[in-house]
Length: 406
Figure 1 (cartoon, rainbow, N blue to C red):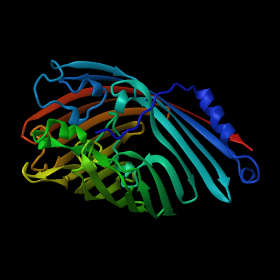
Figure 2: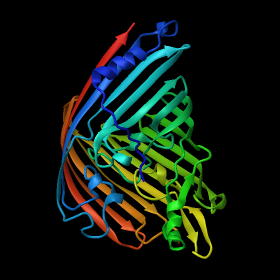
Figure 3: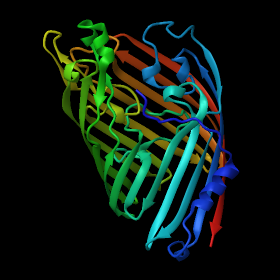
């Protein structure tokens, strides 16, 4: 299952800057305020020592779903990885149009996914615009609370939280220092597991594809205070499938998927430390999770099979601590668990666990160096399991420049 879209391309920083500045609106609306473009660059180098082994296309990060449950599936234990994939570029622009704030965001990193798995290549992250309460483009799903993502240096992060950037159209009528309410329609995606259906006809499983006739509906409500914040988010979706190459594309079916995500960040010690907590549950929500699971699978028996949304829950518990000025740590645990259906195979993903701890030093906003230890485990539907332990040393350099046109 892949939720991070990717695309190939080689574009220079001066080209991006010139393109975005020249694209800003001219004329009456633009004259109402300055047009500002900020360019941020992150240059990062990671040394990772994996003491066991994961899928080679995912060496640069720890995803529990990519840990083998068969010993030696990806080779002997031990792998040294040096990566620059977390390097990236971000561009933020602001102006006004029709008396309302106009904002645009474009960002990418180099962590190839999808058809570019394992490659160091252009990977789109954010590409959206905001005009007043309206937001359109690709950004974090409205079903997600990005502020509970801990201060880790591993790329993928906790498995048991909602985490996906999704194309969407969002309406955000309330967004101030105390409250935020947002509702959106988002790009639907189905992750379907044919499982044992292949036993009926080996070609049948390959012919099954998802149907995406209506967008997903997401919403969240958030309360902010000096103590931190609390957010509740909901998801409703229709998950369907059809069978290619058969009369009427049958068998086909549709099921209702739903999810609820409860998250909070609690400030302690005058706001220097944070407790980050999240609990998400639902049926057919795996496409929105950071790792593991499937949205739709077979239920019942091979004599009388039917489609069913797959129940899933995830938890996140992390603590961000500031030792002294410049020295910080983050430690915590996350878990994803799937309630597998009757007709999923024995090697289907069942449980993913993730834990990490680090020590980071940042003398200022432009440079961070630190070390992190990580542990992950995958358990399959049949009880088979495998784990992984690794250490990561990271050097991160941040730069920013702002251009203002009057």
